[in-house]
Amino acid sequence: MKRLLVLAAAAATLFSVNAQTYPGSKPISFVVPFAAGGPTDRVARDLAEAMRKSMGNGANFVVENVNGAGGTIGANKVAKAAPDGHTLLLHHIGMAAAPGLYRKLQYKPLEDFEYLGLINEVPMTLIGKPQLEANTYRDLENHIRTNGGKLNIAHAGLGSASHLCGLMWQSAINAKEAMTTIPFGGTAPAMNALVGGQVDMMCDQTTNTTGQIEAGRVKAYAVTTAKPLTSKLLKDLPTLQQMGLKNFDLTIWHGLYAPKGTPPAVLAQLNTALKLALKDPEFIKKQEGLGAVVVTDKRVEPAAHKAFVAAEITKLKPVIEAAGKFAD
Image (cartoon, rainbow, N blue to C red; front, side):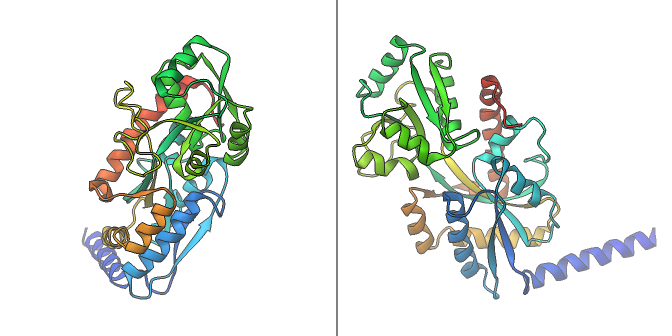
């Protein structure tokens, strides 16, 4: 018993020393589970710079892109990493979609990670090809019901933002059988097909749709957020909730995670640095440039962040499973 107490005391002292000296000279790696150059990669690089300033003490952040399998390869790498605060995961809504898309997921999102806080949210817009007859959202729903089975909706691949949004919207209006889903190998070819009139509809984040809407190359029908957007271009679009889809609220969000078992003092240091970074005017401006809104509510705290992701899993999983198309 005495030996166990001595070992426990030694471990506690070690954790205390580690927390006091963290991060030291070793860099902190942000693992991004997608390719370089995409929206999540840009968020990670912007946040790395902001947290380098907010953490101080010569903290050094690097971004590591671990692409593949809808983000699950990178997430699994962090889940299995040493819990020392030097390997973190920056992931989007795919963190909540994976339990529905992958039946043999190698990690448990709610059990294998420490939650550090939500970072930002990106609204989504429901858009159609320029030749589509409907000009308003009400017209669109009527057009779908009177042309059952003849219309289609594109997405950028299983687990993509446009895939999840399309699924959730079709489920909400009970139009799953009325539209054919057409997958593409990325956002660019899907958007090109929509602009060119080869597909009818798409639901994607404003990061990808705003330029097309502004140029008049697509028709915009509604936004997926709970409240109307305030930007000059999109402020007149109704929310899907206003159009009768009760509680419909879908955004593409990003959060920060550490491996399970990371010392509490290290987690507290990271969360403090994250919250300071989210108030950095330069970071906020960069996120606005991506069409993202920096989170300012209680979800910047670990417990609220985890509760939010749990609710998102509960919302997405049954809809994904009902569609019957899995990534494994």
